[in-house]
Length: 133
Ligand SMILES: [Zn+2]
Image: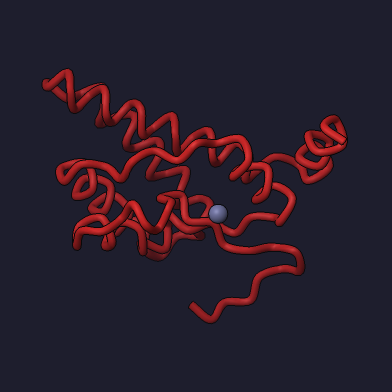
C-alpha cells in the first residue's frame, strides 16, 4: 500500500481474521481499501480485545459489500468505511429474505462497533486498559 501512517498508527482490516477469509470472493472483499482503516495502536488493541470476529460473510453479502466498497475507491479510508457501513444498513432494511436481512444487520453492527472503537479518542481507549490494571 505504501502509504505513510502517523506514528503509533497501524491499519486494521474491518474484515478479520485473515484466516476466515478463504474463498476468492472473501479475499476480494478483505482487500478493499475502504475496509482497511488507520487505527491508533491503543484503539487497535482495544478493538481486538473487545470485538469478537464474525465468520466471513456468505457469498451474496461478500459481493454486496465488495460492490459498495469499490464505489468508495477514491474516498479517504475512514470515510469510505462509514459510507459502506451506512449503505449496508440501508440495504439490510430493503432485503426481502429474513435470513439475508439478519446477516446484513449483524454485519452492519459488527462494522459499526469496530468503527466506534477506531474513532474513539485515544485517551478514552487507554482508560479501558488502566481500569483493568
Ligand atoms: Zn486489526
